[in-house]
Length: 162
Image 1 (tube, helix red, strand yellow):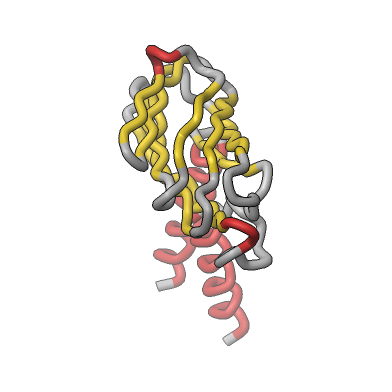
Image 2 (cartoon, rainbow, N blue to C red):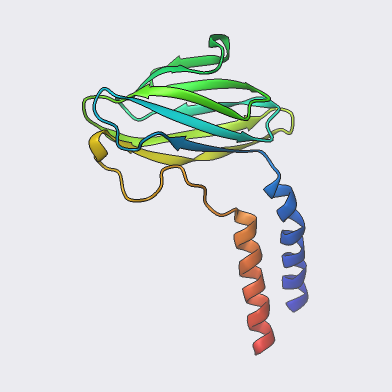
């Protein structure tokens, strides 16, 4: 059993550098609590995606108002906005807050060259702070491989104590 856990830990640690350097997208908001009718800047920080795309899903009532990408690389329909990426390190877009409402901006990213994809951590937004908690909107969570490696290490060290 101990050999299996050691092997598992080694595999996790070997995969960790690959996962750390892999594609990723993080979202930040100029404010998670806009006034009604105000414009919110949303910035997507992009790592390691030479050619790909991002799809953002806006909460009900929030309206896409434009981005820093050329118009032919952006498609907006209802509450969904799609961005075509070509070596971008960031994309900034604007949304207009409704009179009232709250929800989460969610999204997915796609790397067409490496054939991988992932989700972007949800960002909570609410007019005048409605429904927004004290957590940082869009802050990244720990990498799953890191969590697995730490848990495997704890299991192995617990086995050594017995």
